[in-house]
Image: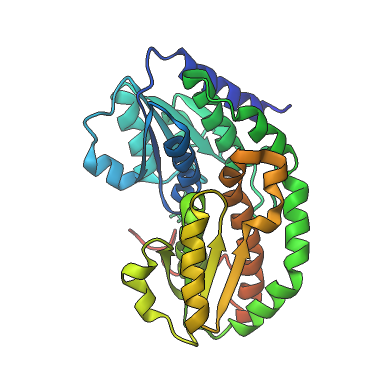
Length: 325
Ligand SMILES: O=P(O)(O)OC[C@H]1O[C@](O)(CO)[C@@H](O)[C@@H]1O
């Protein structure tokens, strides 16, 4: 195993060595924040005593939670390692006595230097590999839950993670015709909504804010399937496009209810169903936690095709990293 993977173990060890772990905070911005939401979801579902919180970095600093302290593990992520509010959040949490664990793609970056433990990851948004951030986040979270509370799902998670690379390749290959058709039929859409819930809320959120808004300048919003009936469903119409993620586990009921309504009134639905990933056979009752990394990679394949059909590369920005903000 590589150095990168050892860092997960070192981080788990550091959390195991703390006198107490009463809470975990997941803190990042944008796509990195969305990524960490899957860790927050797993801790909220699985932890018996540890409380979990998910924040955008600036909100974490502004709220300055009073419970942050020696009993806290703060997991941060910044792909660039440079986002100022995430670096500031790491420093703030570390000064408060929390154990800080940072995910980043850039060694020696300000975030790497600010945090007590760093997990360096490799990046390929169209694939899933064990040295990518999302699988390592699952190993970290289930490792900490095993060490602190005796949670028994780590073995299943690890076994399933070993097969994820092949799984996503097969899923993307199966979706090829759908990807091409959706990209072509969506290229003039002024607005596209993305819906999800449970473990997959972060995948829906990042597609709406990072892909459609940031990288394609397409109007969008992430709609939580449970919230759909409490406002957003009023925008549903035959020509209004939605992407609906159907997850696994308890949350699937919410996605199914939203889908059942949306398909009566919209003719522009793209439905991606985690049931086709075949994860339950691999991971049993831990399967729902592994769906976000597959949805995010699959959605990326849709995004690449959309960018191509619109003639708008995913790399173009007008403000981000160019203007002062
Ligand atoms: O802190 P990071 O992960 O480098 O993020 C920087 C930027 O990258 C994105 O996640 C995606 O481009 C943005 O949402 C965010 O502002």
